[in-house]
Length: 142
Image (cartoon, rainbow, N blue to C red; front, side, top):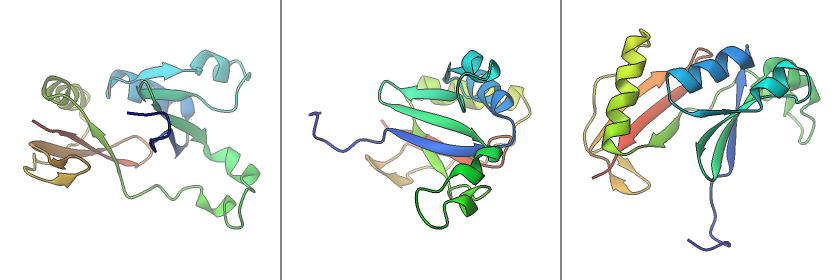
């Protein structure tokens, strides 16, 4: 990959409780929390979780919506999650994620096979929701 290749840098999710969301993404999904202590101390506007070395999920509190004035209609985006975000994982991490979600009684969809994605057909995939209703797909490719 070169420095001028397009990459996904971050996705901002609206959440009702950023600390609870960070805890969910750390313990249930297995992502590394970032800036949680700083958020709890009021030193930053929101915490994040790391998906990989290049991509993070920002966990923005709904109270920030009124400050979203970069484009007309931005304020109204609060509470409108994207259709879903897909996490591609190696097979063992895929299985570990599903097990952690089931341990925490997070509803998960049945396993789907051969769903098409960025790298072609995925071997297996399933869906789950975070505590704020955002939908995630987990998948792995061979």
